[in-house]
Length: 426
Image 1 (cartoon, helix red, strand yellow):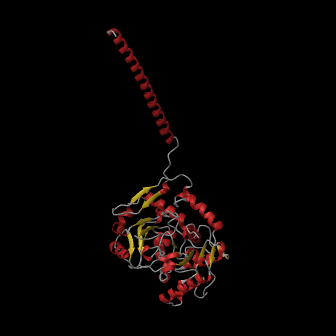
Image 2 (cartoon, helix red, strand yellow):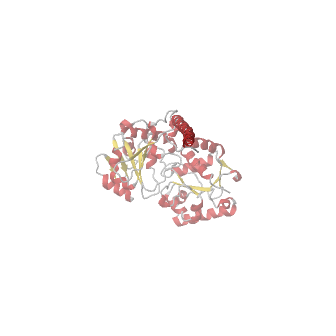
Image 3 (tube, rainbow, N blue to C red):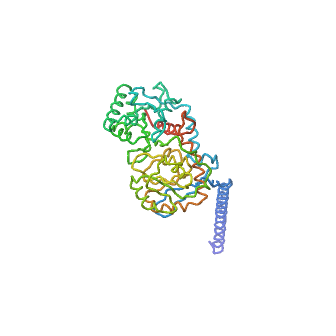
């Protein structure tokens, strides 16, 4: 092959290579442009709808930790029915489940037992343990009761340690009475053995009742306890048991309303030094000029309702844990419109799996007692107004009625029981 022909052939090969490179480049360019187009369209679609609005009433306080200021979290609402979504963890689920509960929930009440000891509704539903009496009366007269055990979702064991205590029965004898009674039900009826008692429940709002039933291990281990003792150190199991709100009714004064301008005192607590946290609270803040802290409990019967009126004039009411397993202070705070400040390490609040307590209360650890005043002062006025507004909305859930009405304390307890029955399998 001559040099001229060789040169000509090399030129032809270069032209072919250039054409191939040009084709590859075109394809690559087309691919890049296509990718950019899809990326733009996808990014644009993400922003085609308006962003969710921040509902002012969805501001939530979280527990303060070791800092001297509170932690504030702003929840982004879904914009649907803010009146409900401000209060409940899942408003849609609550609405649907509540309606289903009202239509279908059935409770069987064991008929056996000494009426002088068991299941006797007091003549007056008043005092520290009125919640227990209201529940006993309402369940007996409610549409949830069924006389056919085969239709029942849950079985109510109608024991009243409060009534036993009123007759002077000792703790030891109460435990024996409770144990014998439950064992008689197990022997006579087949229902306990189907689930080892998981679909059974009992109610007690008395500290002695809690102590008496704790002496019957198979009862508290398996059955659902509806108790005014939401402190974990007394054996409360949140996913199984139900926290019963202790409410002192009738209330001495009407419920607090939209009266934030009258609340000039920063914080209020009056009570006995019967726990470590209460001792510290009184020692640190008793002489403070902005916090109204008194270690001498104000008698509720004191002239001109001094105790109750303190709630009316205060922004935040301190609710520290006490030596007993029950307290009406939280319900008092809610009724009188004073934002409760929960000061406890281990406390399962009533309806905690339904209501978002951060929307209408301040929840602190006991170690925060030393920074209590600064934490409360750091809460902006507009945020306090939102907490107070939501507090008024939940008042209906902490009110007992006879007969019961929709969404009151009785129905909320029944709803909690309804939720628990779903996890029980025969």
